[in-house]
Length: 145
Image 1 (tube, rainbow, N blue to C red):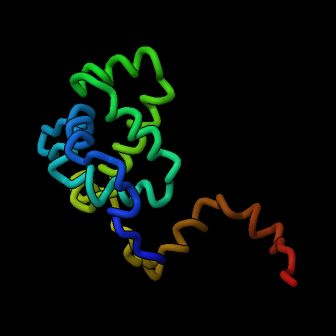
Image 2: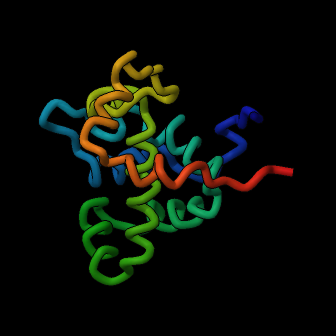
C-alpha cells in the first residue's frame, strides 16, 4: 500500500471551508462529534479521495460556491441532487471510516475477532433434521485445476 501525502492529494481544497460544509451535514449530537472535530476535512477525506479521486472535483465545486454552507447544501439538494449526493457520500464516508466513530457506532474492528464454534455446537444443527437433505445428497463440488 502506498502512503499518499495529503498535500499532494487534494492541495486545491480549502480545508477550513470544507470543515464548514462537513459540519453542515454532520453537526454532531447525541454523543457523536461533529465532522470537523474528527478531522473529516483532513486525514479522513484524504482516505476517501485515495480510493475515489473522482469525488475531488465534486468537493471542490461545492465548497467554492458562494454562500452559507447550509443554504448552499439545501439548494444543491433541491436543484442538483446528483452533486449533493456525491458530496454527502464523500463526507459521510470520511466520517464513518474514522475509528472513533466506528467505535461509537459499535462497528466491528477492521480485523474480525476469532469466534470459533463450541465443541458441541454442530450437533444442535443435526437435531431437527434440517440438514438431512444436504447430508443425504452427499458432497457436490467441482475439483479445482
